[in-house]
Length: 422
RNA sequence: GGAGGGGUGGCUGAGCGGCUGAAAGCGGCGGUCUUGAAAACCGUUGAUGGGUAACCAUCCGGGGGUUCAAAUCCCUCCCCCUCCGCCA
Image 1 (cartoon, rainbow, N blue to C red):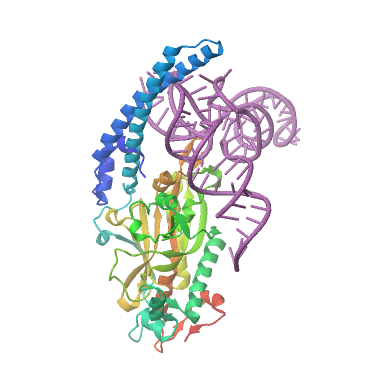
Image 2: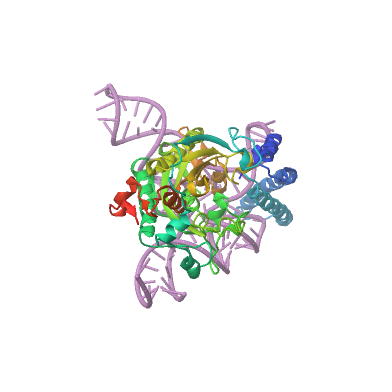
């Protein structure tokens, strides 16, 4: 959520920033409501001031055993008037709040201006794609032939975009989760958390999934609970409504959770393989940082995610998203894209973002500075990494001509020492 | 799910119609003392909104009601605790 006061006072800059990300939101509606709200507030607060003073007088008179019938009667009228205006203010404030919940974040000035993903910028590339003496297969063929991915039965059990992992496939999934968590907690200083996977509407609103993107979420029929689309939701909400201490910052959490997405807008897209599933595992990193440090923290967060790919020996590149491709809540985002031999291209495997104070305003997360000022905190998060896509990348990049797959060295301790899946 | 008890500032906890945004203690901050620290003592210490400002308004789990006036009374929802039931 943007700061209403800031929007009011910097209307042209905000309009331009939102225009850069292709938003068609009309801020003039906001300005009109905002003005009306302040006018009514001034009026009603004056009336309340009168009411407070007069009530005090009535109280004093009562104590002296006197009573002023006339005063009480006129106060009854005044109170009714106050109530009426308060209702009007309430309606306007609800409208303003609903409106602001639908306004996306303004991009950070360093985010390159652009229309869509074609305008994204390649920041750096790590190593080279592997060379094959044969035609590499797609991961779904590699996995099916090894009998570690079972697409048919996944669909039978649930529906399309669900996959059954078997044997060393299931174990590789688990190995990746443990490897990533151990790396982030052991070497990058994150605290491991395991949050609820079902969350309430308030939590979804705080991080920006609701109200705008409800169609992407699985909702429980009989309870006001949603399956999380990412650990970002429960982990960011850990501190909802709290004031943190400056000396504790930055606070860094890493969490493994399953993630659930309806993929409502992705009909027919990437239906083969395990790239786009309704249920997938992910290890997530979440940070709470001081505003003046949050962009440095984003660089570190991104390199924490990169290190996972480096240790796994997977070729990748880092993309800086342009304004037009930025997510709803993000001010700046780096995507990590891993090399996928079967289609000789890159596939997004991690997204690392700084949300500035956008989520903190929605979630009311603040911190107290050393000089006792209370300010909104900055929130960040990034995948470290998406497990399913990492597994797909390993099957493709480490496949051998005989159909077997070499297990990357760092994973072997997690795989009972085996060097190859065959 | 049933019965009872309770939700007050960073924490513990008093208040149960007006003088209470809220006692007291702890914690935090500043100071005195000390070579320094601790202890002791003194002072100070909530948030949000509106206003150029003086200042004003709002907030005692959420929402609604009664009243000239609500942290205090009533209704309702949520949450926590204890006991019973059920259960991985």
